[in-house]
Length: 284
Ligand code: GLU
Image (cartoon, rainbow, N blue to C red; front, side, top):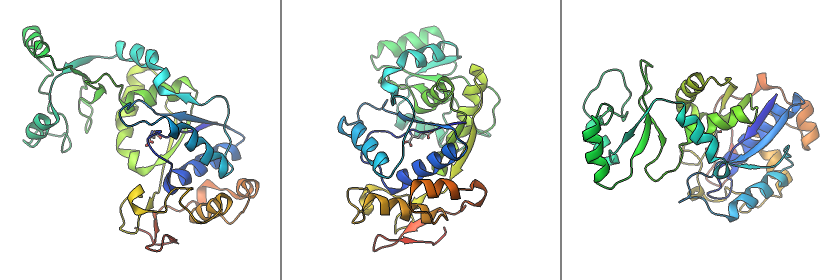
């Protein structure tokens, strides 16, 4: 088994990220599997250099280790280019506002906010006219007959490769066959499965796991306060113990946790950080 944790170096990891990392690590390592860390750093406007090391430092501080070098997506753009060249795509010049407006009109079986296909069937003359406008085009995948999946972006207008494309290419290239990630990413899975099918890539086993919520019941974020390892009053070992508790595990050391870990008994509900920044067992 090869598992992975794939954070974006746009800030310090918060307790929710650390908990998902711990879980992915336990799952991979109990089976004697490999565990990789990959930096998903394609959104250059949001990435900050200092967070690569700080994120790795925090993972190590709670006792996690990983195999091989830490891969950076920003250094793998050729792989994404090759994948795009094998897919049926078209350029799209729509702005977010235009998509919002057009998407509010009903259009069959696509979910709310889905791309309505404005640029899908432009003639070459129309494409040339839009290109002459000077705004760089995004590239969208032409999706045929997949319920619930629209023509999603593979490469943004600013040149950045999209998360869905990169994650699929990298998981396959790195031999990742076991993906553990927050259930907030579950909506992307049908798009990723489609890309795998089109590219002839093997499908990993997916586990979308519960999240830590803030005291307001929303997904944990920096604004909730005391959410990163540095901000916590506890030592890193105690933070790990606390995170393990929320997973129903009582071990105190990584070895004890590995011996105890049983994926079939994991909690299925999100857990919540209380107003005094402690953990409730409250389900949502
Ligand atoms: N890079 C994504 C994130 O930080 C996670 C990707 C994944 O696990 O598929 O939310």
